[in-house]
Every structure is written in structure tokens, then in C-alpha cells.
Length: 372
Image (tube, rainbow, N blue to C red; front, side, top):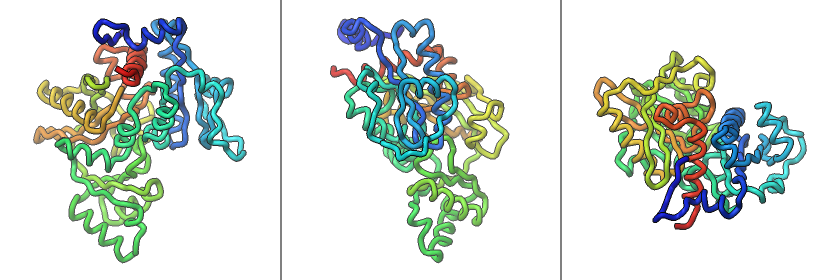
């Protein structure tokens, strides 16, 4: 058990346990109003198992809270059933009451949100939990929002001097503008970034709405499609490189994991490839020179600080082996915790097993939200 001590005093977790003389009640918050609803359920099941492991079961009591796709919060039997079955609940078809929270919310000592995508890792739920004045795992409003919005994220990386691929930021209004202007916009993108390039909604995760384009016609179609997902859009230059990732754990003094590499046969690392067993291979640790590993770890910690992340994050990079160049791709402040997810596997290979990882994340949340 990792204990954070300050001047010989008890850790924040120990202080709470001494005061309560009971298990810490952890609100496991999952589901959510995004296209990653089902992935969130899978992540929640893995975290619940870790909290129920022998080394954690005496410390934590799990209270599941399930957010339906219509935004209604469910606790008690409904939340337990979804968590146990792993199957999303169908909305009842009634007008949702989005501001009626289950009475069990008042019993929570600490929240563990595992909501992927919009309305989950973009600062919205973090703002609500902040108003509740209860500790929660992960980044706060700023870190979550900056880590979710690819345009804001890349602006922060540029300010921090972290190398990245060329990109162009657009809005839905530009894409759906005058039909005489739109083709010129596409010509400008092609001239600046070249083909192939990637079109992405700025605020979606898990490769949702992303397209790799090679022609003017494909670019127009991809931009139009991305605009249906988000009002902010980003287009990135393609690069021939190895895709490598580093996990970060901590608050003001974070640490970086070993480096992992993703290999796959599909055109790019899309949603199906990411979440289908056998579609992609994870090489941990990645076969890289020590100097490259150290540089990646250093850049991951720099990116973590650049967006004011906290608790956990996974930082993705492009390693251009031909030139030795390292380019940051993005940071994910609430990465997946499924059986195929890179984040927990990176820490397992660094020496922190899944139950211990979850335990440390809870302690980091308490540390961050306890006045010093």
C-alpha cells in the first residue's frame, strides 16, 4: 500500500479511516451520455473487480452509480444489475429528470468516475463533482477540458514547446459555409498538410468520427461527417511512424511508465481495432533504444503538466524511426480500463498490478483534494 506522508503526519487516506473507522465509500460512476457508453461499463466492471480484490476489499465499499444514455442517474439495484451483467440499460422512454440524483450520492466519500467521451472526461462531470465538494479520481475541470478538446490540447502543447504534427483547426460553420467557399478551404488544407491526412472531431474519444483521407473528395466527405459530431474540427497531417504510448500516474510529482507500442493491420487505429480482441497487438515494453524511451517519458510528463492533468493520463506519440523524431499525438486524461486497454497494462509491466493501481488512484484523489 502506497502512503503519501507529509512531515511525519498520517496520509489523507489514513486520516479518513481513523475518523470513520469504516470502509471508504467509493462512488463508481459509469455509463454516460456518449458513444463510449458500453466501453465505460466494461471499464467500471474491471475497476469494481480491483476494488473487491483481497488487498482492497477491507478498505473500500463500492456504491455503483449508472448514468443512462438519456442522462438519468441510477443507483441501487439498477446500477448493480448493469455492473454485474455488463449490459447497458434501455431508456424507459419517459422524459428524463436530469437534476434528480439518487439519495445515495450523499453517502459518497470519494467518486471514481470512469465515464469516457463527452459529458464524462471533458470537464463537465468534473465540475459537478467539484461542486459536491467530495474528492474524485482524475483531472479537474481544466485538465479534463484541455485533454478532451484536441485544439485546446495542441495549443497547450505548442506553448510548452512539445513537437507535434502539422494541423489545422476548423469550425462547423466553416465546413457548412457557402458552397463556393468550402472547396477553397479543402484546397488550402491539401496544400498545407498534404495527403494522406486525418480529419477528427475535436471533442470525441476512441477514434469516433475520425477518417483517413487521400483525395479531395474524401476530404470533403470526412469534414462534413466530422461536423455532425462536433462544432470544432481538426485536420492533421499524416506521418509514417510507430505509434507508442506512455502512462502517467501522480499529481504534482507524477511518474511515467514503461513505453508500449501498438501494432495493427487496419488502415489506422479506429474504434473497432481499439476495442476488438485480436485486432491490435500491444508490445510492452516497446522495443526502443533507451535514449528514445527516456525522451518519451520526459515528454509525457511535460504534456501532463501542460494541460494541468492529475491522477492519471495516457500520452500517445508518433516515433519516426527513420529520422529519430518524436511527435506528440494526444493526451487522454481518462483512458480505458478494459482488458485490452493500454493504461493498466503499461503499469502492470512497470510493476504496479491492477488492484494496487486503482488503490493508488484513490489515494492520489484524496491527496489532491485535501488542503495542505
